[in-house]
Length: 370
Image (cartoon, rainbow, N blue to C red; front, side, top):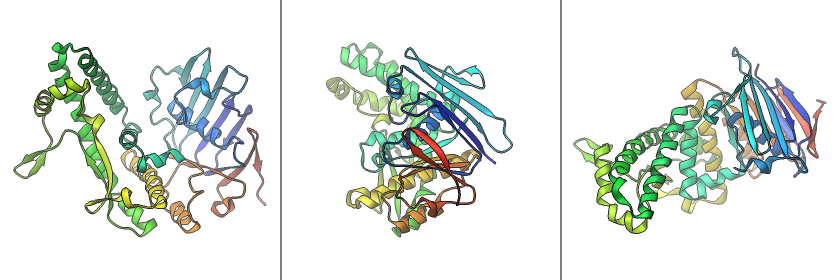
């Protein structure tokens, strides 16, 4: 049986308390503004060392306080107990894993494998292109810390290249072009592969819930594939470096790099048409929700590990029939944490392995089964 124990102190407006649970499903139930999402955020924070709601740690501190801490124990079946301690004081964050200082957040990857479902996921369907690129990159970094290094290196090279374009000191452009091509090509290959894998999962999920077939994810890399005798092939590093050199005058004029993985486009297609452009709001919301389910399925297939699912009011705006279909399609999980409003029919989704906590003013109490 999985085990996740969370003790939060001064985390946003949560009271000093703890959630100890070996239950398979844990529901947090309460009215708006009571702290349900804060609890999910605390779990997420221990998994990734950061919040999905803000990039500024000082915003997490409890009102009228100047520090926070969150401590978590996590154990999968037949695995050793993992202990995560995070403190923030005097504008300094300290992360420890099993008593040892974590110098880089990527060291937390796969410790607590969380997949988050939240309202911001709608941006994956209708937001700016960088949100869809972020989703692909997040899916890859969840199980592959080396991809984090790929992204960091690429961003560093890109920043340096853009800087010399702005400063009009072009001596290093040949060097940066070759580095950008080498690092960017690795990202492009991995993105293409993950889109291929997702399309084995996503389209079937969407058809099962909506009845609409042939919806797929399309990946259009900025550095186009080249014609080959049997179709197309990935460009080589030299091919990309030549493209960058060919378009250098444009980049000089605009003082920025106009091609590369940071310009890749990811769209949702049905046949030869973009699906999102004509989809209803409900269909768009379903795209975002099923992307997260596909992410959890993909993670399990690659790693053989069951994820922890964090679902923040994401079922609220679906009709009852789609809610039932979505819950039936959830992949096998280690644990499931859901938030519900008090008036929602959350008992309809309870199982014998479910534990319910009522949340009021940042504090919580366990609901006794009737």
